[in-house]
Length: 102
Image (cartoon, rainbow, N blue to C red; front, side):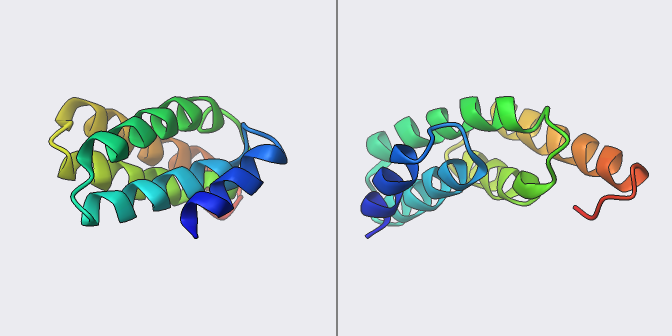
């Protein structure tokens, strides 16, 4: 079901917060199923996409990078996890200072 949701969301635009969220969700499911190689490919795709989205002022992707950071930590990708979590904190602080809920 998560794969289908990802396919549908990608067909509507491949660089959106909903696609990134679907990547994280599917990677989490695959991790729980011990399909690490497949999960890590999705994690890498999500990292790249969130790298683009997190620079924007759109508050929509505010919590999923946090989930992704925790998923990366679970995959022992500590430097990437740190970078994602750090970027999330910086972004949330910036949004808070702008008066935008994150």
